[in-house]
Length: 418
Image (tube, rainbow, N blue to C red; front, top):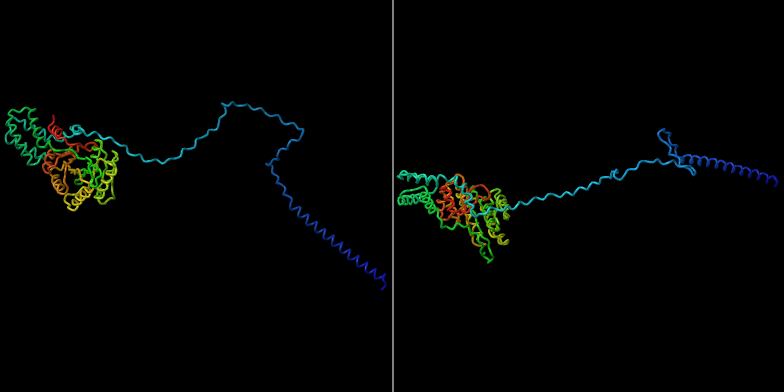
């Protein structure tokens, strides 16, 4: 092979290679164009759907175009303009506090029995006016004197006091001779006063004293009695009597066995501003009484009233516990008063209770309740004779201020009338 022929073959091969490269480039360019074209089509946003309700925004004005004239509207004065109403924010809700009970001012005790005289007189006509009617007879024979005796016994005066009174009346009538109504009334009044007694000390002793440790001790009053006599109510009313006399009082709810006794006493105390010391229901009464006196000493109170449980006089164990209460209280100092509350309507049955209580604790005074009802006025005489202690207070109704210091003169005047 010659050089020319070899060169010619080489040139043909190169042309074929170049041609193949050109074809490949063209093919590659075509493929690239197709890919780029498809990508550009995908990036175009979709055409908005044609809807008759969608309106195109107004064209913006161009430079040189005149603006449309502004329409003149009628202007309102400031009075015609309604300003927006601003509502005040609601006030914060404050929880309601329970109101403290109002402190009452008890009725003065001076002359209280006189003011209650009419209430007492309505229920005592059998004794006073009955005696006057009998004594006014022209001839006082034995039958009349027996009727006088029966009248006194029916009024619960008692056998021995009745016999004494009849004997004195017989003697006075014999000496007096002629008897006018005024003379008879004066005679009967004098004899009844002598029978009841005017010399006894009927003061409820509540003076402060000296305790066992030398400290000043308030006056201590124990209130005892059988259930149903009005003992707790009497204790509350006695607190009112003492407050009316200007004394500060602490109440001891030592009746821990009767349901709601402490609540009842506390209600009475709150009405006059007296604090009540109480313990758990069914707790030790002596402990409550001891704490009440202790609190009275700490507060500098004038008087401590201790309401004890209403002991049934037939239950020896309970009566012994009443004696324990008194002994425990005396660890602070002496007890100034032990008041026995008796229901005046029970008559002679109340004397049985009085005897048993007197054996357990030293009774210093008597409180007769319900004397305005069906009670017989003679029980005042009988109970004093039985115990040898005076009646110091009488209950003449259900009102808060119906407990009155006993005054023999006012009592007898109510019995015999005007």
